[in-house]
Length: 188
Length: 108
Image (tube, rainbow over all chains, first blue to last red; front, side, top):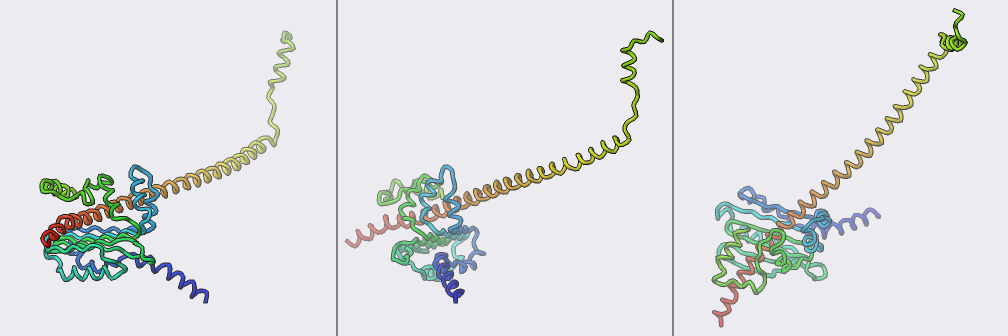
């Protein structure tokens, strides 16, 4: 009887942690077609290690990472368009959003889309966000579990190797600024 | 010959060859053997302690180095993840900032 309670307790502890991690195994079929891919999966252990890091950038990293529990990034880049169907990509959206996500911003383009969804915690508070971006030659999924204000990403500009891109309404592109913005895009 | 002084006689007496006591050789050998047995034992212990201390310190240093390496790798991955996220957010924001007002203007 005690064992059953213990197992139930362990399961109840494991379940929320497991639920945080997105199952991206469905991308494996596309992985072989991709020319470049990025796979980042940082769990609590790695993030805790990072928080103990000392050095120049440690304060900024610690400030950003203090409330983050998991970081999961998967990007696939293809050498030409048409390596995956839009139906596949739409299915991806449905699969990824099947969790506790509330769509925040949805941008549909000619040959792709970008979704930014907020993860809802048990008490309705924001517990992370998900970015899913599908472009003709690129699929990107960013899953950040924990409390990270999207605007805090803007604070990264000019730090940690992030180019100086203005965030917020003040960054409204003007015609004369367009070549500069293109130049900044290329930096990535 | 009678010129020998008493001093010379005393010297001769003092320096005359005396046979070693019969047990001296064995006593010296036993003492040497005992010493050779005890000294290396202590030295071996000291060596073991020094080696253990060195190994402990080395392991700790290696562990710390490995932790530091893993932390740096995590920091690099975290930074890359934020860069990708920021790029995507910035892309969406540029679409919203540029396209939404234009469409709203058309509606008006």
